[in-house]
Length: 68
Figure (cartoon, rainbow, N blue to C red):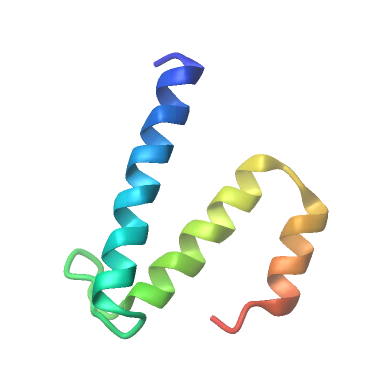
């Protein structure tokens, strides 16, 4: 997959995740992740994206301010 395809996929899937989160709210259970709620999934996804970007300052800020 080319970089542009990855970016388009992240944009599309990120939009779908944001829509689901807005519709279901932070306490909605995630059917494919037993024991997880939307807030857990969003926190996990955010941490993964910060790790992948390789920005240690953003990752540190996330760890210090995250409540999940």
